[in-house]
Amino acid sequence: MKLKTKILLTCIAYIVIPVILLLGAFFGIARYVGGLTPQMRFEFDEMTEDLLIDLLIAVVLILLLTSLLITRWVHSSIYKPVSKLNEAMQKIREGDLTYVLETNKTGEFGDLFRNYEDMRMRLKETAEEKNRQEDKNRELITNISHDLKTPITAIKGYAEGILDGVAATPEKTEKYVRTIYNKASDMDKLINELTVYSKVQNDRIPYKFMRINVSDYFADCIEEIGLELEQKNIEFTYNNMVPAYTQIIADPEQLKKVINNIISNSIKYIDKPQGRIDIQILDDADSILIEIADNGRGIAQADLTKIFERFYRTDASRNSAQGGSGIGLSIVKKIVEDHGGYIWASSKEGVSTCMHIAFRKYMEIY
Image (cartoon, rainbow, N blue to C red; front, side, top):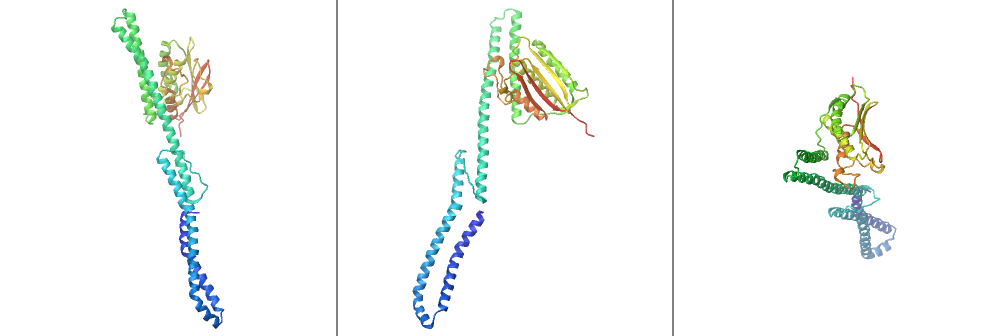
């Protein structure tokens, strides 16, 4: 029953019940008197005063009983639910989001109780997500501290070696300087990754979408990648199987970040004496499929669905060779999805890993 109806019925009961009782008593007395003889009416008149007093007492008692019943009904159907809801809201104010307010009521109070439960669950989910995010941020700070400390320590050590004259030959000096440069480059990559991550967090990646020719774009991109892999003594193959006119809508700069990030990740986890990376661009009806495969150590099946989560790392040891913030692939996934594409991984542990990226082709509409 709705609250408005309950209040209306209560008011009516307070007014109507006494009226009904008085009218009932009046008509009852009138009917009784109408059936009396003159002698009996004379005797009745003498009894009227006592009768009226008894009638008044009866009416008062009935009114008291009615008020008691109505008050009890109002307490159970209005005051008690309001009190429960007030207690529940106080729990939320105190930060207790575990207080459950269950009900099988209908009407406004039933709606209020269910709305409270919906609000409580949403607040609880938000609080839990905030706690998880804070834990991840603390983990990120720890990871960054570790990943920055390692190259900084190396840079200081080699710089001190040069200053102290330990690098006595030009060859040794060149080796020290090159090491310093490489470590500084690692730090620069990490800082750039964190900058992108900050933009991802706030959905502020500056996209500049345009039509790009797949064959031309990847030919240029692969040329740069090939030079880097050659320096690292990693075998590299590239196979483009899409028609020469194939186009996609993409941000060239952000797409290059996706490819470079996956390549860097592959290099990091190659554990064979001779590393190998293969890139294929495949034609898949109304989409293109980019496959980047390596012969690294692979990923366990249990980890495959988690590698794109922020801060997730399959490498728990966090050694300097395989360190990282754990946000690279989450950034890749974000960029790919912002392009309307899909990314997933397949892997055979100890053998290889392959990243698959699908983008929809650009189609002219006439």
